[in-house]
Image 1 (tube, rainbow, N blue to C red):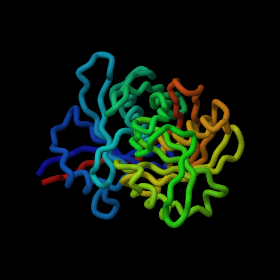
Image 2: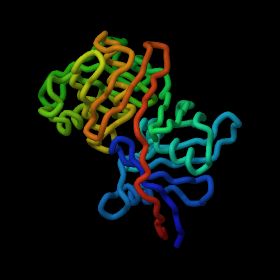
Image 3: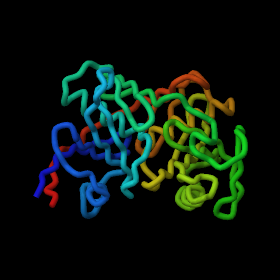
Image 4: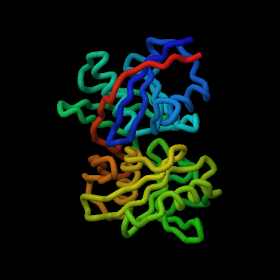
Length: 277
C-alpha cells in the first residue's frame, strides 16, 4: 500500500484536491484520478490539481489539471488560486510569484484577506485557439442544439468557452443545453458553456456547465470568458463582479491584447491521506 497525502480546498465552492508531487512519489493513473474525484467512493472534487517541480528559476512550480473523467485540461481559474494559496502557506512565500500550466505562465498575488488574484493570460477570440470548426472569426456564432438556435460568443482563456446571453440564469436548462453544445461537432475537443445574465455594465450572473465535470458552483475561467465576451460585445466595463452560485469573483480586463485578471477566495477545507494499492 502507498500513502498519498492531499489537501482539499475550494474557490467559491468550486472544490479541488491538491496533490503535491514535488515531495511524494506516486503514479498518476486514470484509476487513481477517478477514485480521488469520486464523491461517493473517494474524496470528491470538481478538479484534481497536481503540483510538479519546475526546472526554471523564474517559475515556482508547474501544475496539471484533471477533470473527474480523468481527462487533463488546460486551465482552472479557481483551482490555480487554490494551488497558489497552498504553496504560499506551505513554502512560506512572498505574496507574488509565477506558476506554469499546460499552456500559460500564471502570475499570482496572494492577498491578506485570503483572496488570490491570478492573471489567466490574454483571451483569444480566434476559433483555432479553442478549437472551433468555423470558417472565420465572428463576434457571435449560431448553433443548433437541443432543438433550439442559440447565439453565442466564443473565446479561449487557456481553455475553450462558449458564452450565451440569457434573460434569467435560474430558468435556463443548463444541463440539457450544456451537454448539447459540448457534444456539437463545432467543438472537436468539447467546450465549457457559460450561461450569462448581464445585469449592468459592472455585474453579471453566471452558471457554467464545465467540460468533464458538469455544472459547478463556480468556474474562474468561465467568469473570465464571460467578461471577455461581454466586453467584446461592448456590454461591460473594465472591472466586473461575477455572481455565481458559490460566491462572487472580481474580473479586471483592459481589453483585447491584455491579460485578464481573476480575484476570489481560496479556502483550505481539510488535509488527509489515501492508502492506495
